[in-house]
Length: 256
Ligand SMILES: *[C@@H]1O[C@H](CO)[C@@H](O)[C@H](O)[C@H]1NC(C)=O
Ligand SMILES: *[C@@H]1O[C@H](CO)[C@@H](O)[C@H](O)[C@H]1NC(C)=O
Ligand SMILES: *[C@@H]1O[C@H](CO)[C@@H](O)[C@H](O)[C@H]1NC(C)=O
Ligand SMILES: *[C@@H]1O[C@H](CO)[C@@H](O)[C@H](O)[C@H]1NC(C)=O
Image (cartoon, rainbow, N blue to C red; front, side, top):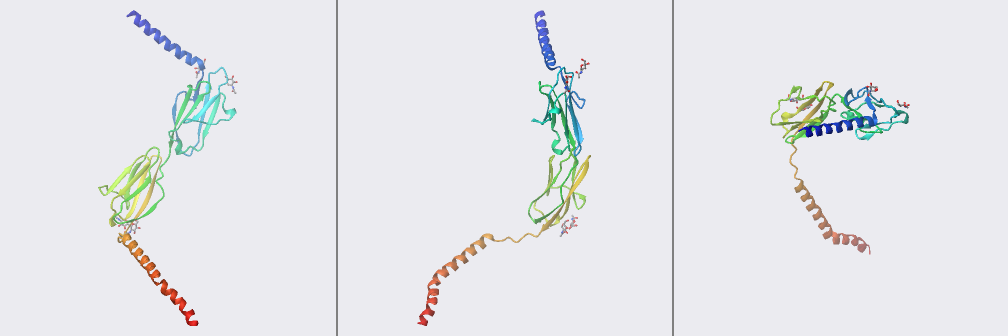
């Protein structure tokens, strides 16, 4: 028993020594915008994000690196030592969820990451007119992206659409869709998708114009008829060739 607890104690001592060594190896701490640990920065799209990384408690000049995701950010020489600032301007939707990490060149395990939480309002898209033949299926699609995620609703002629088997609604974080199977004349009208988020609202109108069913056009029969007519014409020309030649010869003969 006594031996086992001594072993455990020495194991613990090793771990402590390792931790101590790792810390001593650099002795440096990084901070980004005064945070010593990873953090999330909530910011509106279109605005400017300024990130300042500082090497603290170092006895020597420390070179810093910045990464956007896995990619190195190019830094000017005068923006590398002890302190390094990067500016994201303007912050865009594509920066949402992206981690910006400041690392110590000498020991890249010393790092602080900032994950951007980019807030942006929805933009459902431009209004559309859709002409559809009665009996066909149609899908109306609008862009539903926003941060935070918005609430979506379909309207028909400005009243909330009552969903039943005739309609199918599909939604993910990017798009919001309404499918109408076998469109009928009564489906004609204006459909609106509305996306509401705490950052703003957006809507898109679809003018669905249901057209008469076109008479079924007998394409194959028409092609067959055209082929027959053309062939008949060709045979006719071949058969008449002699006659035509005779015809041309005749005048010269009569002239003689
Ligand atoms: C820097 O060192 C001072 C004194 O040695 C200590 O009080 C302080 O907490 C250290 N700061 C960091 C960020 O390690
Ligand atoms: C960086 O910090 C170290 C240690 O504090 C210092 O010796 C060095 O002069 C600084 N270099 C610059 C460019 O600020
Ligand atoms: C919706 O409005 C369109 C045009 O204003 C109209 O043709 C259609 O009958 C209306 N549909 C319903 C269900 O009210
Ligand atoms: C069909 O709907 C469109 C869009 O709302 C409307 O402009 C048009 O008048 C409607 N047509 C009929 C026949 O109801």
